Image (tube, rainbow, N blue to C red; front, side):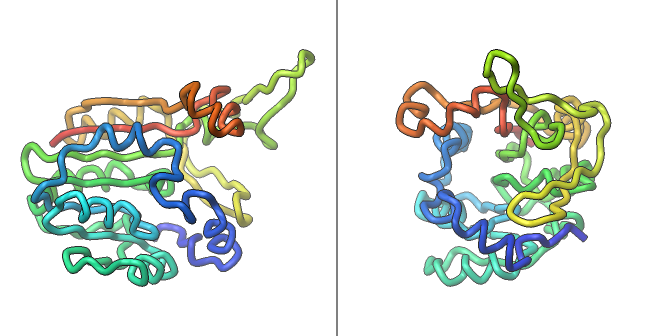
Length: 242
Protein backbone atom coordinates (compact mmCIF):
# COMPACT_ATOMS: atom_id res chain seq x y z
CA UNK A 1 0.00 0.00 0.00
CA UNK A 2 1.15 3.54 -0.73
CA UNK A 3 2.49 5.32 2.35
CA UNK A 4 -0.43 7.39 3.64
CA UNK A 5 1.67 10.28 4.90
CA UNK A 6 -1.10 12.83 4.32
CA UNK A 7 -3.12 11.36 7.20
CA UNK A 8 -0.19 11.96 9.56
CA UNK A 9 -1.38 14.92 11.71
CA UNK A 10 1.99 16.71 11.58
CA UNK A 11 2.28 16.33 7.82
CA UNK A 12 -1.34 17.29 7.15
CA UNK A 13 -1.04 20.42 9.30
CA UNK A 14 2.12 21.49 7.46
CA UNK A 15 0.56 20.78 4.08
CA UNK A 16 -2.57 22.75 4.95
CA UNK A 17 -0.43 25.86 5.52
CA UNK A 18 1.12 25.82 2.03
CA UNK A 19 0.06 28.48 -0.48
CA UNK A 20 -1.33 25.93 -2.91
CA UNK A 21 -3.41 24.36 -0.13
CA UNK A 22 -4.93 27.72 0.75
CA UNK A 23 -5.20 29.33 -2.68
CA UNK A 24 -5.84 26.27 -4.84
CA UNK A 25 -4.82 25.92 -8.48
CA UNK A 26 -4.16 29.63 -8.99
CA UNK A 27 -1.65 29.56 -6.12
CA UNK A 28 0.36 26.78 -7.79
CA UNK A 29 2.99 28.49 -9.97
CA UNK A 30 3.06 25.61 -12.47
CA UNK A 31 -0.72 25.65 -13.01
CA UNK A 32 -0.75 27.92 -16.11
CA UNK A 33 1.73 25.61 -17.88
CA UNK A 34 -0.15 22.51 -16.75
CA UNK A 35 -3.51 23.94 -17.77
CA UNK A 36 -2.11 24.63 -21.25
CA UNK A 37 -1.62 20.87 -21.72
CA UNK A 38 -5.24 20.00 -20.95
CA UNK A 39 -7.88 19.29 -23.59
CA UNK A 40 -11.33 20.90 -23.44
CA UNK A 41 -13.28 19.44 -20.52
CA UNK A 42 -16.63 19.57 -22.37
CA UNK A 43 -18.64 16.40 -21.67
CA UNK A 44 -15.60 14.40 -20.55
CA UNK A 45 -15.53 11.67 -17.92
CA UNK A 46 -12.51 12.63 -15.84
CA UNK A 47 -10.49 10.84 -13.16
CA UNK A 48 -8.08 12.68 -10.83
CA UNK A 49 -5.39 10.42 -9.34
CA UNK A 50 -4.40 11.79 -5.95
CA UNK A 51 -7.09 14.45 -5.90
CA UNK A 52 -6.17 15.97 -2.53
CA UNK A 53 -8.52 18.81 -1.63
CA UNK A 54 -10.38 18.36 -4.92
CA UNK A 55 -9.23 21.61 -6.53
CA UNK A 56 -8.85 20.11 -10.00
CA UNK A 57 -12.06 18.07 -9.71
CA UNK A 58 -14.02 21.25 -9.09
CA UNK A 59 -12.18 23.08 -11.90
CA UNK A 60 -12.98 20.28 -14.37
CA UNK A 61 -16.63 20.31 -13.35
CA UNK A 62 -16.83 24.10 -13.70
CA UNK A 63 -15.29 23.85 -17.17
CA UNK A 64 -17.79 21.40 -18.60
CA UNK A 65 -16.79 17.88 -17.52
CA UNK A 66 -19.75 15.49 -17.48
CA UNK A 67 -18.50 13.45 -14.51
CA UNK A 68 -15.42 13.68 -12.30
CA UNK A 69 -14.00 11.00 -10.03
CA UNK A 70 -11.42 12.06 -7.44
CA UNK A 71 -9.28 9.32 -5.92
CA UNK A 72 -7.00 9.64 -2.91
CA UNK A 73 -5.56 7.35 -0.25
CA UNK A 74 -5.90 10.01 2.47
CA UNK A 75 -9.10 10.21 4.48
CA UNK A 76 -8.16 13.71 5.65
CA UNK A 77 -7.76 14.90 2.08
CA UNK A 78 -11.05 13.36 1.00
CA UNK A 79 -12.87 14.84 3.98
CA UNK A 80 -11.64 18.32 3.01
CA UNK A 81 -12.56 17.71 -0.64
CA UNK A 82 -16.09 16.63 0.22
CA UNK A 83 -16.58 19.56 2.59
CA UNK A 84 -15.69 22.04 -0.15
CA UNK A 85 -17.54 20.44 -3.06
CA UNK A 86 -21.19 20.98 -3.95
CA UNK A 87 -21.28 19.89 -7.61
CA UNK A 88 -23.44 16.80 -8.09
CA UNK A 89 -21.26 15.45 -10.93
CA UNK A 90 -18.19 15.04 -8.68
CA UNK A 91 -17.63 12.04 -6.44
CA UNK A 92 -14.67 11.16 -4.26
CA UNK A 93 -13.45 7.69 -3.37
CA UNK A 94 -10.64 6.35 -1.25
CA UNK A 95 -8.19 4.38 -3.39
CA UNK A 96 -4.62 3.17 -3.21
CA UNK A 97 -3.01 4.06 -6.53
CA UNK A 98 -0.67 1.09 -6.12
CA UNK A 99 -3.75 -1.09 -6.66
CA UNK A 100 -5.95 0.95 -8.97
CA UNK A 101 -9.25 -0.67 -9.92
CA UNK A 102 -11.06 1.20 -12.69
CA UNK A 103 -13.44 -0.13 -15.38
CA UNK A 104 -11.95 -0.58 -18.83
CA UNK A 105 -12.41 2.23 -21.36
CA UNK A 106 -14.46 4.33 -18.95
CA UNK A 107 -12.65 7.70 -18.91
CA UNK A 108 -11.86 10.38 -21.48
CA UNK A 109 -9.26 12.18 -19.39
CA UNK A 110 -6.93 11.38 -16.49
CA UNK A 111 -5.09 13.95 -14.40
CA UNK A 112 -2.63 13.81 -11.54
CA UNK A 113 -0.81 16.56 -9.65
CA UNK A 114 2.37 15.79 -7.68
CA UNK A 115 1.25 12.33 -6.57
CA UNK A 116 2.98 9.81 -8.83
CA UNK A 117 6.42 10.10 -7.22
CA UNK A 118 4.97 8.22 -4.23
CA UNK A 119 4.03 5.19 -6.35
CA UNK A 120 6.40 2.22 -6.30
CA UNK A 121 4.78 0.22 -9.11
CA UNK A 122 4.35 3.13 -11.50
CA UNK A 123 4.55 0.93 -14.64
CA UNK A 124 1.65 -1.11 -13.26
CA UNK A 125 -0.39 2.03 -12.66
CA UNK A 126 0.30 3.28 -16.20
CA UNK A 127 -0.74 -0.06 -17.68
CA UNK A 128 -3.99 -0.14 -15.72
CA UNK A 129 -4.75 3.50 -16.50
CA UNK A 130 -4.19 2.90 -20.22
CA UNK A 131 -6.85 0.18 -20.09
CA UNK A 132 -9.23 2.46 -18.16
CA UNK A 133 -9.01 5.24 -20.75
CA UNK A 134 -10.94 5.31 -24.00
CA UNK A 135 -8.97 5.37 -27.27
CA UNK A 136 -7.83 8.92 -28.02
CA UNK A 137 -8.05 9.96 -24.36
CA UNK A 138 -5.58 12.24 -22.62
CA UNK A 139 -3.46 11.80 -19.49
CA UNK A 140 -1.82 14.92 -18.08
CA UNK A 141 0.24 14.94 -14.90
CA UNK A 142 2.89 16.68 -12.87
CA UNK A 143 5.53 14.82 -10.89
CA UNK A 144 8.58 15.79 -8.87
CA UNK A 145 11.50 16.03 -11.28
CA UNK A 146 14.01 13.17 -10.88
CA UNK A 147 16.78 15.73 -10.40
CA UNK A 148 14.86 17.27 -7.51
CA UNK A 149 14.40 13.83 -5.96
CA UNK A 150 18.09 12.93 -5.89
CA UNK A 151 19.93 15.64 -3.94
CA UNK A 152 22.70 15.15 -1.44
CA UNK A 153 21.54 16.05 2.06
CA UNK A 154 20.96 18.82 3.01
CA UNK A 155 20.27 19.81 -0.60
CA UNK A 156 21.58 23.19 -1.62
CA UNK A 157 25.31 23.89 -1.36
CA UNK A 158 26.93 27.31 -1.65
CA UNK A 159 30.09 27.45 -3.79
CA UNK A 160 33.07 29.76 -3.29
CA UNK A 161 31.40 32.45 -5.41
CA UNK A 162 28.28 32.40 -3.28
CA UNK A 163 26.17 30.61 -5.90
CA UNK A 164 23.71 27.88 -5.03
CA UNK A 165 24.37 24.39 -6.36
CA UNK A 166 22.13 21.33 -6.30
CA UNK A 167 24.53 18.36 -6.09
CA UNK A 168 23.08 15.02 -7.13
CA UNK A 169 23.34 11.80 -5.16
CA UNK A 170 23.36 8.55 -7.16
CA UNK A 171 20.95 9.79 -9.81
CA UNK A 172 21.13 6.46 -11.68
CA UNK A 173 20.30 4.48 -8.53
CA UNK A 174 16.54 4.14 -8.70
CA UNK A 175 14.23 3.23 -5.86
CA UNK A 176 13.09 4.44 -2.49
CA UNK A 177 14.27 7.79 -1.16
CA UNK A 178 13.36 8.90 2.36
CA UNK A 179 13.06 12.62 3.06
CA UNK A 180 12.01 14.82 5.94
CA UNK A 181 9.51 17.17 4.31
CA UNK A 182 6.76 18.50 6.59
CA UNK A 183 7.24 15.31 8.63
CA UNK A 184 10.00 12.75 9.11
CA UNK A 185 10.23 9.61 7.02
CA UNK A 186 8.39 10.64 3.85
CA UNK A 187 8.96 7.90 1.26
CA UNK A 188 9.26 8.81 -2.41
CA UNK A 189 10.22 6.66 -5.38
CA UNK A 190 13.12 7.95 -7.47
CA UNK A 191 13.43 6.96 -11.12
CA UNK A 192 15.32 8.56 -13.97
CA UNK A 193 13.65 10.63 -16.67
CA UNK A 194 14.29 7.82 -19.15
CA UNK A 195 12.61 5.23 -16.94
CA UNK A 196 9.60 7.48 -16.37
CA UNK A 197 9.02 8.25 -20.05
CA UNK A 198 9.79 4.72 -21.26
CA UNK A 199 7.27 3.34 -18.75
CA UNK A 200 4.59 5.47 -20.40
CA UNK A 201 5.63 4.31 -23.87
CA UNK A 202 5.70 0.66 -22.80
CA UNK A 203 2.18 1.01 -21.38
CA UNK A 204 1.04 2.13 -24.83
CA UNK A 205 0.85 5.90 -24.44
CA UNK A 206 2.07 8.41 -27.03
CA UNK A 207 4.03 11.25 -25.47
CA UNK A 208 2.71 14.64 -26.59
CA UNK A 209 4.64 17.12 -24.45
CA UNK A 210 7.20 17.22 -21.64
CA UNK A 211 7.90 20.41 -19.67
CA UNK A 212 10.77 20.54 -17.17
CA UNK A 213 9.00 23.38 -15.45
CA UNK A 214 10.70 26.57 -14.36
CA UNK A 215 9.31 30.04 -13.61
CA UNK A 216 9.15 32.78 -16.22
CA UNK A 217 10.70 36.22 -15.75
CA UNK A 218 7.28 37.63 -14.90
CA UNK A 219 6.65 34.91 -12.32
CA UNK A 220 9.97 35.58 -10.62
CA UNK A 221 9.21 39.30 -10.50
CA UNK A 222 5.81 38.55 -8.94
CA UNK A 223 7.22 35.93 -6.55
CA UNK A 224 10.99 36.45 -5.99
CA UNK A 225 11.23 33.23 -3.98
CA UNK A 226 10.69 31.32 -7.23
CA UNK A 227 14.12 32.41 -8.46
CA UNK A 228 15.78 29.35 -6.90
CA UNK A 229 13.58 27.09 -9.03
CA UNK A 230 15.73 28.19 -11.97
CA UNK A 231 18.75 26.49 -10.42
CA UNK A 232 17.24 23.06 -11.08
CA UNK A 233 13.81 21.82 -12.23
CA UNK A 234 11.57 20.93 -9.32
CA UNK A 235 8.88 19.20 -11.35
CA UNK A 236 8.00 17.74 -14.72
CA UNK A 237 4.73 18.28 -16.53
CA UNK A 238 3.82 15.51 -18.96
CA UNK A 239 1.00 15.10 -21.48
CA UNK A 240 0.36 11.76 -23.18
CA UNK A 241 -2.44 10.26 -25.22
CA UNK A 242 -3.91 6.80 -25.39
